Amino acid sequence: MSDLLSLSLTEALAGLSSRRFSAVELTEAYLAEMTAARPLNAYVLETPDQALAMARESDARIARGELRPLEGAPLGIKDLFCTKGVRSTAASKILSNFVPPYESTVSAQLWRDGAVMLGKLNLDEFAMGSSNETSAFGPVINPWRAEGSNRALSPGGSSGGSAAAVSARLALGATATDTGGSIRQPASLTGTVGVKPTYGRCSRWGVVAFASSLDQAGPIARTVADAALLLRSMSGHDPKDSTSLPVEVPDFTAAVGKSPKGLRIGVPKEYRVEGMPAEIEALWSQGVTWLKDAGCEIVEVSLPHTRYALPAYYIIAPAEASSNLARYDGMRYGLRAPGDSLREVYEASRAEGFGDEVQRRVMIGAYVLSAGYYDAYYLKAQKVRRRIADDFTAAFDKVDALLTPTAPSAAFALGDAKADPVAMYLNDIFTVTVNLAGLPAISVPGGLDRTGLPLGLQLIGRPLDEETLFTLGAAVEKAAAFTARPDRWW
Image: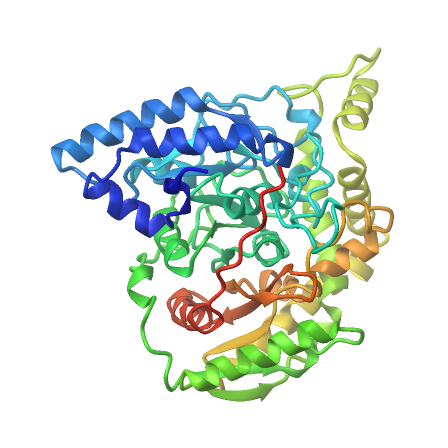
């Protein structure tokens, strides 16, 4: 493996600006590694020609002294983001040949700042899943393996390709999206840093919609500082997105390395769930100790409606998915199956184009929105959502941030939970509350379990207070000193 691949984003940008190596050399190193790592199935489309053209442009700008914030940095793009002239599928058969004539706002801002596109990353179909097993392109394989075992592990989902690519050194960083934990859970399972920003911090324009009131774009990176760099470029008001917040983008990188002394950290008692593995509990306690040692004050807080978060989420998210996915009817774009009538074309196109999990969620969503059940399910779930948000508001009157585990386990074997959708949904138990309340959160690697697999700690912040999360995340990162890497078996 090239030594260039061992550099963090921050280190690589410093090397590029000082001309120790060129953007083309860095990009070629990543393209070669992507070819060698195809067994991981992290990329669904590689774009080497475009990557090298973008790298050559960066080298020319560096030579002229016209550096942009991410000049020459090779990144992977989750295939939920539309990329102009480059196939964008949401990992679904129904969009298998869709080539958008426009660029998503988030990816356009990355290219504006000088980043290089290596390709499109695998994900759960339409971002619906927690294991990256629902993709029409097949599952992503986690680069980590348990000690003494050759079993293929899940990288988590839906942003499994993004997390696996960053962990396996197939990109300096990656875009991802988080609807119920789809950035933070895969980050935890792959030993990477994942940031779910405040709802509205990053534009959703040009991102294929799953559940519009929950979806939010964010970065997956190797370090907290790298994540701060990426989020700064990805953020900003976008008039094309009515949910985009008209607020200034702070310099998130300035918050990294600041002292967290004096900050009050809440530990929600309701997150100590029955059956929590002892290793997760131990890591959580270790995180509390690290923040105490950094000068933080620890306060127990209550989020009493936490127990209702998963049921509410799995009513609201499928309801919005059912509405958003109604547009895929075989008429305007995407797959069209033959039929003798309009109804037959609709039915055949959707039956052939959507996978099992997407069909399951669309049907659940249609059911809870139907005339006889709207009040009993959807309306009640929205009321619960309000209560969950109120719980966080009350907690943030007392504390500056919350500390919790990110996921209820380390990486699990592919196929282990696929037969039981409810078991798979439980992977989001620590993350969905954040999406329901529209809050920012970060997952930072905290250590390894007894089989050598990574575990993550989650920090949750006030709306638009990602800066505090970067300060605390950097403190946890420093204390954890997580340097483990997956052994290269591919």
